[in-house]
Image 1 (tube, rainbow over the protein chains, first blue to last red):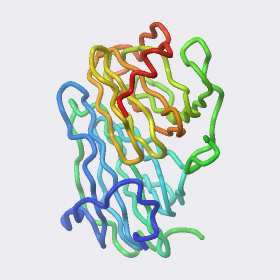
Image 2: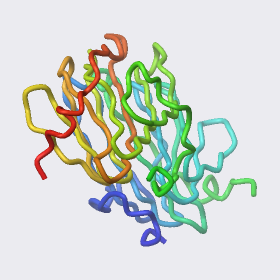
Image 3: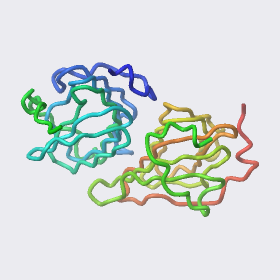
Image 4: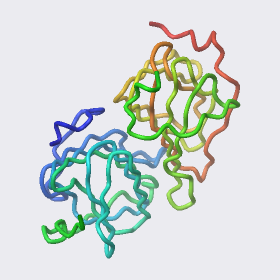
Length: 135
Length: 135
């Protein structure tokens, strides 16, 4: 459960349901600005929670600080991601991320090159897509 | 001691003595590339260790994941930084960071806008400067 995550940061605000399935929490750490061109947030996903399919015009890096989750790029298998993993996502690659079925996930999401835009949000990840993980 | 840090990531390589005083460890997490324009590393400073005075043409964000340390911008007092703190450093601001006297420090260092350069390294932080912290 989220309560077992390592608690480096406070949990933040409930993630917006238009972009997330299930319960997740977002803490803004660095707001976007035109000098750093970088936005950083900490996200805690409770088991089963995930964000919608989306892409970032400037790319994204995920730094997993606790738990076990899933990451999928469109057209590729779901990858299992764990505490200590770093995920590099190229600009415009359609993807989603979230917790696994049984464990929460905490990651820092780093969005560079925000002069190009931050995120394009698409449709939710269906249960069929989410359950497609190979165990 | 560094061994008490939360161990999300492996310790990495010993930090180069030309840019650091004392013992620190650097783990490259995301190498710089011309698509993400972003370099990310995890740094563990043992008590008393700090990096030299330096600046970043693209700015920097420090995400403190464990311990207690110091951060100082040129001409300002030393700030005490702790687990959970996020430090925003504007481009070209001369500064240093490191562990406190008694505790190790672990932070993720995020360097955006690397198309402008990554770091300009300057002189070591003297013991007199390091001991200038107001407790």
